[in-house]
Amino acid sequence: MQKFATVATFTDEIEAHLAQATLAAAGIESFIQMDDGGGMLQVLEYSKGVKLLVDENNEEEARAVLTTPASENLTP
Image (cartoon, rainbow, N blue to C red; front, side, top):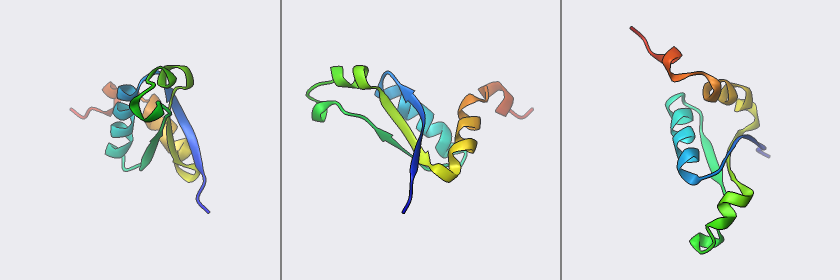
């Protein structure tokens, strides 16, 4: 059975999607988990947060990718 780990929690969906795109660029599959009442209660998004999940085997690498400044990933 596959287990998932939360690597980051965000206050809104846009930030979570940006982080998800960063992980995808590094070849790490991720999922967003949030509760907004099917779009009817967006206030829940702010109170519970938007979680970014990865396979627990990729947790350490995903955290490293998310905490590395973008300027360090640029090649001259």
